[in-house]
Image 1 (cartoon, protein in one colour):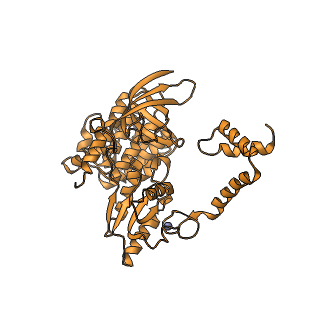
Image 2 (cartoon, protein in one colour):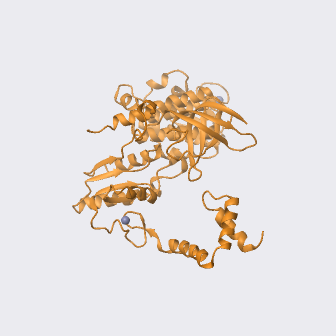
Image 3 (cartoon, rainbow over the protein chains, first blue to last red):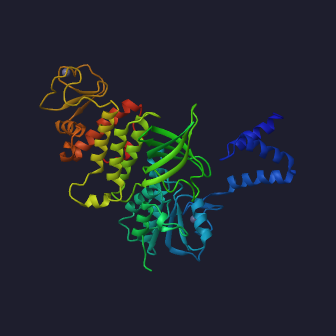
Length: 202
Length: 258
Ligand SMILES: [Zn+2]
Ligand SMILES: [Zn+2]
């Protein structure tokens, strides 16, 4: 290996998800070759993201201040709350442009087999938030469970809706079933069952 | 390296990279396997929607030698686990079945009888018909499913504690009062054999009889009610007994109904 600094850079890059030793070496030699400004721009961006970005104290979205841009946006529907597992799920929903309510990011899902329990997520804060809004009037009219359509995601949504059972709010979950553009004939029987039970008015 | 086909229950799903999973599967034909499913997190691929926890699926995989992970090439969903059919109690019971299968079995050590028992339990806990069954007469409580599965699994794997007579001397245990269950001895103890034994759990007569009924191969367990007190005592004893086999308390045990 050429130098200790290069070795250290490769070692750090290898820790990134999906980056093996070969890729890390390629990236390291790329960084060595580019202009100093460009390379230091990357270093600064990493420093900024770690120093400036935190979780919104209301919804746990990524934020550059105490309150995120969505919670601070007065034009959004404040009676509609969408519960997601991760900030990247929120980004996906925002990109659709079809949702104008608020969010709550759980920062994970209940996964007993992985040793992740409800106390490690932001579930207490969510229940407190919904309860407080109800007490102060202006509570939520609907809470949309947008956890992943997996056993763990469904289990997390079920756990939360049990906790919210005594609060007068409608709880819904995202539709599931057949993929748009696919063919019924080849749809999996279990997926078809979901589509049938989740059918809606024409 | 060879191509294998099997029926499998998904025990663990670990996100491996942006697009791949590493799975732990319990197959009927070959026992437990660990396999990587490349591209499984992308919406379209050869894995259908099959690779979720507790799902029953048909899989095709390349068996690797020399300790490398097997490679899954195909998976078709036979039945998914429906979380809302019987509620959280049933879901946690399902997780517990997966944890025990994973902890109690070794890779490439098949136990088709155990597979069938697990599959039937998961069907009752989370099959599409489970919610219909739940409202019908004779519905099975998750706590009963858990105890039945634990005892059948222990029997199939050769760990079943001796319950009907003293594990040390073979004589009947006392017909009155509480019954001593020796965790290290591997079964119940009579009054003469009890003294000096370490790690002994005291069971009420009712809890002991419940264990006996649930451990029998016949269907006696279905007629045996699981009262709250019995459930708590039996959970404690089984938790400690299984911990003695796998070396730690099962993680999901804390989530089970007590
Ligand atoms: Zn926010
Ligand atoms: Zn004895």
